[in-house]
Amino acid sequence: MISAFSISPCACASLRRAGRAVSHLYDLVLAPQAIKTTQFLLLKAIADAAPIAHCELARQFGASEETFSRRLATARRAGWVQMTIDARRRRMYTLTAEGFRLLEAAMPGWERAQDRLRQQLGDTDWSTLIELSDRVTQAAVRAERAPRRNAPPQERSKEPLAAD
Image (cartoon, rainbow, N blue to C red; front, side, top):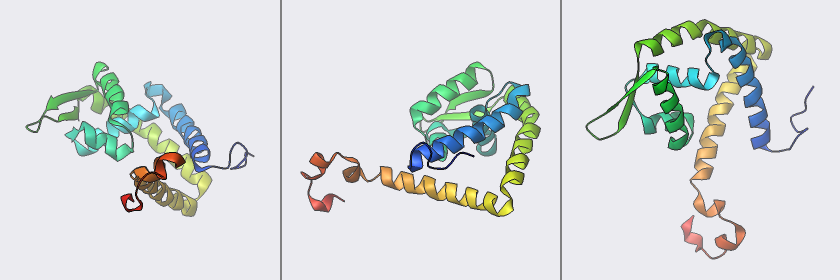
């Protein structure tokens, strides 16, 4: 069994390792549809909120807009999503018929992966995982928005204390 601290006693290493393992499980069950977990999540988010702005997608996933530019470009080339520009000049995304077809075909595999993981964790740990993941995401976003604390020590000492 792999210890939570066998590689590094830090949240980043532990969460990345868990994320890779979980993604691998989901990727295995989605393989028959030739879709990756990241692509499924993108299609699902667009289907649930369409039309949705590019910036809002990135915000929902806690990722940069640049990351989503690449993912959305791939999905557009595959014919899964379409983009329009709204009155506020935002890039808005919706699924195409092919995107809906792929999402529908992949859903049983997704649900199977969910069931397998939930069964391994048990209902209590499953609920704890979902709640804790949301709290960790929110904490990381708040920490990222604290620029003075993110600066190297020599730069922090030059800033006035009121900058926090």
